[in-house]
Length: 160
Image 1: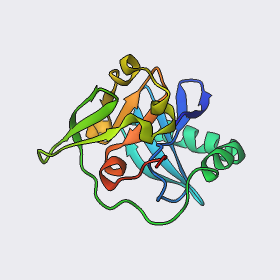
Image 2: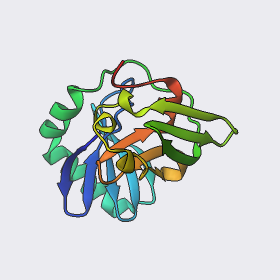
Image 3: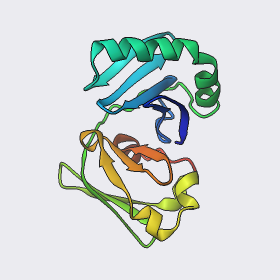
Image 4: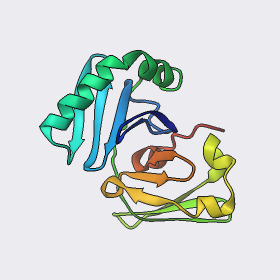
């Protein structure tokens, strides 16, 4: 999903396919990425960010919690958490299909048209897919779109 907020070098965003998790926000920094639950606000995951920066991010989340919750709550339902977390080793686009090779050897594909932002992307933009977070996520920088690999495997798409 698109970026919700940028503050300095921090990018606050969420993934388009995490619809079954409780409300939360991902924060990307130059050093890594962390995830905070929003109800109540608490650190869920940290990859590479120092404790000092985590405290600073937590303070920013408290200060901007209304705008974060408004944007996320309108998209995410708090049902159940995705339990399977496969990782991608390779990702590519071909003829409006996105393919992901997983660590277990499977190759899965899905039509770009299953996500709002990817549906409107050009074929060239779709080919700019990058693997992020040690295979946990796909990112299209020019489109400002992030999708998790476990969500794709679970079939969590935005559009029918």
